[in-house]
Image (cartoon, rainbow, N blue to C red; front, side, top):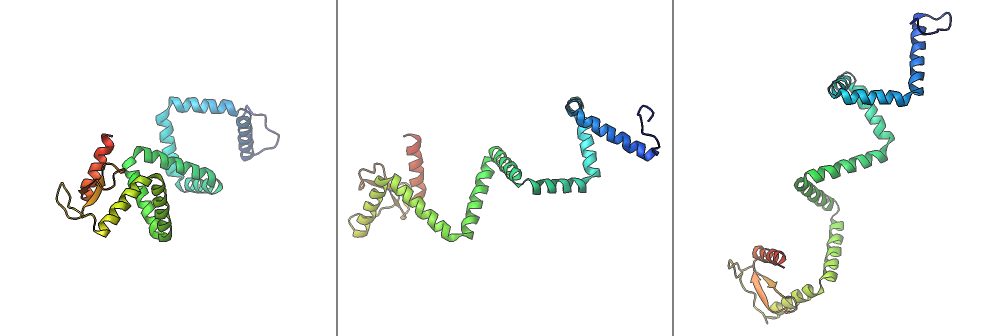
Length: 196
């Protein structure tokens, strides 16, 4: 303690406090230098830094948890951004799991608000009808013809199932249809999209 110029009449405890204040003041005045030293040491000693952080966390777990809670409570906007970014990164790394999770979330949402589900279905149908008027007209023409008895509903031409749907190769010709079950109907549309 001899290299410090202490005010006269200080006890050993007061001298330690005086030194601590001096060091704190020096750190504040030389923050850039201190950060530079700190960053350089961390870059040169990553294992020691990890060990130090681990030991500190084990010794101060409760304190650390309290600090985190206080920071989160004081920064709700930043927390929202951090969580959103973390979810986005996770979804990029796990696209299949993210798709399943999103679907489950949507199902839970519509179970909770069934009236919103009905509204969403109506909106979706309206958008589809607006985007595909020729498809809608061809389907309605088939429905009317089957209901009036002018057209007989056939079996699936691939597997012979009686529950068949009318498949249009060309929607401009609504009565030229191929009867396919749901599975083969989807497969045919997939094939058409691939080779379109």
